[in-house]
Length: 403
Image 1 (cartoon, one colour):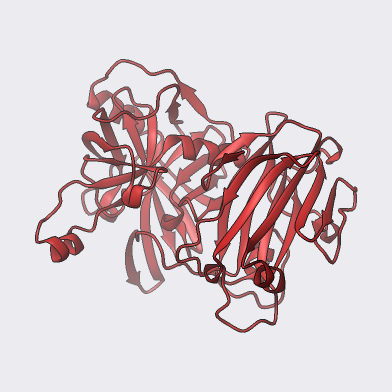
Image 2: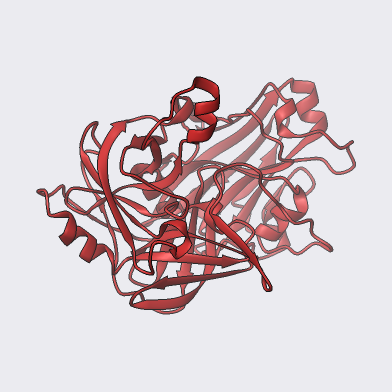
């Protein structure tokens, strides 16, 4: 059985499969948490309340998904799932009416797994529980990609619980509680007469106007706009993965250029990389800023294998921009920089150019899960940074948000 990390996905084929969920302590898991499976359309929204499968409603309206328990399992006939269903999300939530303070973080373990029809385990996703203060979550999902089914480890939590989770799927309960996150780095923020504004960077990944950025760049945004020297447009949020700090936006009109991911070998230790973005909210000028450096580590802080470390200088506002290789292909999504002041307080040393990016493989899996085709190309020879910057001007955008 293969173990997955958040954001990873694997093909499942067709036929009958079983998705199971359990946790420890076993008795507390059964008493305090409830599971469900939600059949969703291509827009990520539930089509009908009868498409929510749980212990209270143990079968979907088409019969392709059925609940069995204990332990909590969902038996799914992938060949019988209607064509209108693009994904099946497996969700977990604290039962209503329990005392405040019961979150996922109080459990010793929570897992979701995929097995074949005979019960033979295939894939396992053990949920990382450190500092998990949420009360509702998308644990995993089955989704269609190019006509085939894939299983994806998600782990997207909702601190506001069931109301926020329901709203995410298009079910609008009365008086939903707004979800807020305290984790992750912050984009540049300013407060004016119209409320708080903040900005970051994003890049176009599809000619229909799909833009990739960090989730923390657009978190809490009521209005989102994209701007570059050649373009300005309104963006809407299409798909979000707060756990892996990724968000997919879409413009209502095509954009000028499209980035391409690098095929084959991923980023290598020591290779040259280029950052193109809009740091410091435009204080350095209205055009994109370009810096260069090297990949300095293939793991992120805390041995996080989803990230890599690089030396190209970044500032607040670079978050969400592309990390490009020496040929101009995307090898990562810029996500954070080391807090030099905090490190100096702890060690007496001042670190320089210690920055982090989400690896391209995770970003590509995110786009596949969202059903968005992206461009890729084989590794190429080194190009001049000026030529790469000129090309990137057409697909790198400043993301401007307003609360």
